[in-house]
Length: 533
Image (cartoon, rainbow, N blue to C red; front, side, top):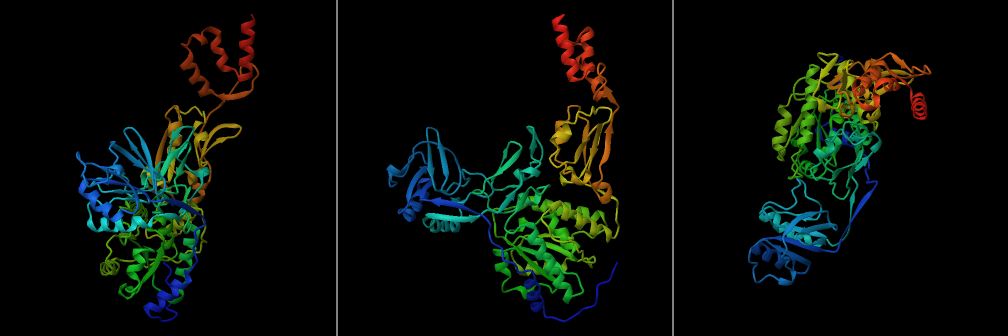
């Protein structure tokens, strides 16, 4: 392995930190905004005593009450009590709707004082307050609610490219990773694509991390900007240091606030990288950091979002380490740390073993998620302790091949029709099925579309990029020619399969079965001739 150049200069830890941070400085502005308008119409849900306390603080607001007691407290304003049974609440600040047994109402804000809130999402919508019997959260809610009157802007956190989304085709279900990942239920199925509600989206980035195609991209900042920052910072690091840095990723809220006065507590080999949300950066960023020369990566959940469990992100960490370990890299190249205490973080970073680092890759930052991922993994493969030709992966890893049962396949090309990324291709003028592994995201649409159940998904990562990018012949068949005009129009297997399936049908008895061996034009002529005779 290539040794790093000798130390060029000696800098204090704080000077090095400032130098590297300066290299990564970039102004990031939201490109689009979502407007939320609230007139302050408030719905308060709870038991009588809870409602009394809330009403005293919120008496100046335009509120309505839902009391869950059989006999509401007589001190409550009866004109504001809704006696109907509450069934559901949905929406967001300025656009909430509450459904009762006999009616619906619209409100701007909701204060839900139930132990188990009506809205069950992990992350509650903007304008929906649910203290969960926590006195501090209750008091904070009472302080914040009167301030939420007016017009408010929040960033649109995502970009979505429906053209490369693998969610669905022809009413068949494919990838649903983003729907399962979103803790705010901001994503819903919408025909062949998905719809992301920008008013419900709170920018956690979980959908971005799990999207296999890059159809969902974080917008504040986008991937290309984050990678360019990372590249600039690692290059600045190696101008001053010969040892590999340990990249620490944390959010701009609690993470940066906690570190502001405690940077000197961190080990000297830490390269700090802040981001709007830690979920905005997934496997592609982590392996790029290692390819750019980092010895390890730690994602720090500093506790900004108590309602996030980050399960999807942590699964991505496990997948990434699985791939790296298969190449002989040490366990824990990518780490997760979820305690807010900086002293504990520092101890963790000190005791985490860092790899000496590969020679820094030179590939440029760009927006194509899969392309960058392939660049980074190819670089790490070239410098791996124990390189292998391929790695076996679970089916949901987003990489792999498909295997075709050639005895069952009739080359109907239903799979080609539904493939959202062009991984499956026909033979143009030949009855063939070709496959480009580099494109495949293992969405399963081809398997769902196959009428013969001839397709099996096989999750893996193939490091031979020439083989992965080159079309591979999965199946071909001899051409069947029309028995009348001799024009090719199907395969022998397809014709034989149709004959077997239809030979007992009343419409294909006797000579009528021969029509299946004719092309469309000749078949129509034969049917017209038969009807006229």
